[in-house]
Structure formats: C-alpha cells, structure tokens
Image (cartoon, rainbow, N blue to C red; front, side, top):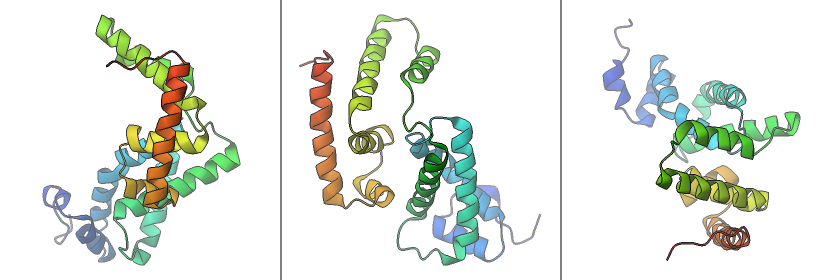
Amino acid sequence: MKPNAPSSTRSSILNDETLISLVLAGQEHAYTILVKRYECRMHSVLKSYLPDYEARQEVVQDTFIRAYRALSRFRGDCKFSTWLIKIARSQALSRLRMRRYETWDSIEATLKLWEADFYTSEVILEKQESNQLLRLAVEQLSPTDALAIKLFYFCELSLIEIGALTGWTTNITKARLFRARQRLHLQLLKEGFQAEC
C-alpha cells in the first residue's frame, strides 16, 4: 500500500472535489471510491434507456473510463455526479442509435420482476395490479412525457438534475412534468384506474 494513499474508511467520507484532487495527484485508489459511490445511481438512471443489465454495465464502465481520462478537464461547473450522468446519457443514446435497444422495459420483463419481488397477500397483489397499470399507462405516453415521469418519479431526480441530464431548463422541465402528469392521469382513467379518495 502506498504511504500517501487514503484509507478506504477515511476516503469514503471525503467529498468528490477532494477525491478528484487526489486522483489528479496520482492516487488512483480515490477514483475507485468515486466509482463505488456512483455506480448504483448510474445503473438507476440508465434503466430508463437500457433495460438489459449487461448493456447498462458496459455503458457504466465506459462512462467511468471516459470520465477518468477527462478528469483533468472537469471544471467543477456542475456536480461530479451530474457530469457523470451527462456522459452516461450520451453513451446510452449512442448505443441506442447504433443497436436500437428498447428504451423501456417490456411488460413481460416488468411482470417477471414483480413475480420475483412480490408475494401473495391481498394488499401486495393490489399494489402489483396498480403498478402494472401505472407502467402500462406510462408506456402509452410520448417518449418525452415518459422520460420526464420516469426521471422524476422512478429515478427520483431533482428538476436541476433532470435539466442537466436532458438539456431542458427548469421551467421546461416543470412544464413537461405538469403536462406529462395530466396525460398520465387521463391515460390511467382511460385504462380504468380510479384513484382512491
């Protein structure tokens, strides 16, 4: 172990800027901490683009390699995580254009996940039916509306993070989310879903 290398316990509590400085100073272990810190989040964001785990994993790895090579050019104008997401999104969209991957999980794949995760109690079955109806309704929306809904509600990204990822301004993001929610509500009513009062 290098004498100047940060211990994993100490380095895991360091902020991104400090870890980036350590990487640029030649301590590659610090980059491993950044990878571990953001790998799951990258997978979560990329699920909307690439339903296949292997395809996502390749894009995540490629993103971290590209980010590492460009780290000296990272200006810190945005958060490191936002910068990573931009790179990942760009890589995912390139992959979709080249290979024409499905951008949303198929209904069958979603059902298989639910079957693995849910058991047989009545409450859980009702939730499963509601979730299935919600997924079906989201799939009926336009790609832009579906993306807005998935990023905000399923990936739990903030308006600023969505803007950084998509290139939309905060006002455009708010407007798209508002319209997407209205269209989703109409779609749910059309599918026979009645919200509980």
